[in-house]
Image (tube, rainbow, N blue to C red):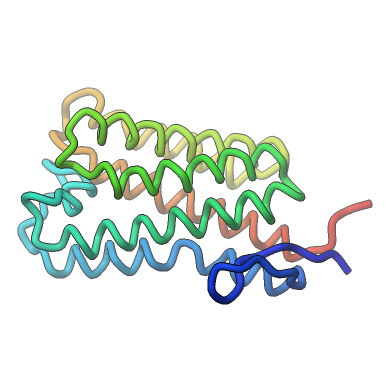
Length: 196
C-alpha cells in the first residue's frame, strides 16, 4: 500500500496512508472558503460587479481583512505542502503547478490590496498558476472536466477584460469554483490505486 508524507502535530512531517493523505488534501481549501463566506456575510456592501474578491483583504479599508487574509494564507500554505508532498507523486506537473498556486495564494494574503501593483502581480500569478494546474491535470489525468473547466473559466474573464464588468469578482469566483472542482477530482484519483 502506498504511503505519503503529510504535516503532523506541531508542524512535524509524518508518514500516513493514502486514504489519510487524501483527507488531509481535502481540508486545504476549507480555511479560505470559510473565511470568504464569513467575509461576504459580514460585508453586505461588497459589489460583485465593481470589486475584486481580494478587496475584502485590503488591510486599510476592509473591516474583515484579517479574517480574509488569514483564511487565504492558511489554505495557500496547506495547498503548497500537500501538493508538493502528495499530488506531485502521482501527477508531477499538476502537483508542481498546484504547489505554485498555493504559494501565490499565500502572497495574495500577505501582499494584500493595500500593496497595489504588487498585489495585482501576485493575484495574476495565482490565477495563471491555477489555470496551468488545471491544464496540466487535463493532460496528465486525461480529464474532460479539467478541459471544460479551463474553457469555461477562460470564457468567464471575457466580460471583465472587455470592460463590461468594472471588477473581476465574478470571473474570480467562477475560476475558483472550477479549479476547486478539478482539485477534488485530482483528490479522488489520488484515492485510487495508481495504474501499473
